[in-house]
Amino acid sequence: MALERRKLSSLGKILVKLKKITLTQLNKVLAIQKENPSRRLGDIFLELDYITRDDLHNALALQFQYPFINISKYKLSKEIIKIVPKEIAKRYKLVPMNKFKKILTIAMFNPLDEEALQVISELTGLKIRLFVSSREELDEVIDSVYK
Image (cartoon, rainbow, N blue to C red):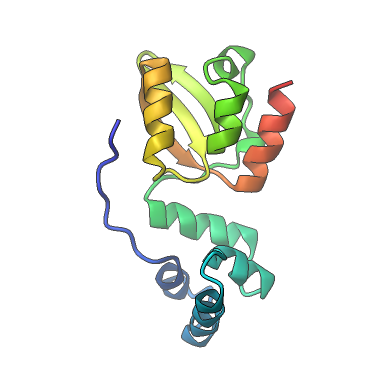
């Protein structure tokens, strides 16, 4: 399943537009990231207390153009969880949420991970509907539902 190519805005621009950070703060964070390119912008914003986790999640959902869900508050059935093996869920940071006819709804940290979407699509034979969720919540949910 190839993702349609979407034109994504940068996380920093989204946060500025939402008035969560200033241009000065964005430039500081970009300078920090330039020194250590493997660090994620969102993590730097959080470490500097420029934004809250909710701010980050909302901005990421806008950036990815998918709705955000607090997966820890979603009731997951045992039947749905069985659709995706624990190893796949952990590797790609995703959780199956619901199945309706030929559509599987999943929450995942990176909805642009084409490899993950291809694996899930081939594994299930279903079309995929996406929600964005936080890494931390996905890790907690995966650990609690896959016992």
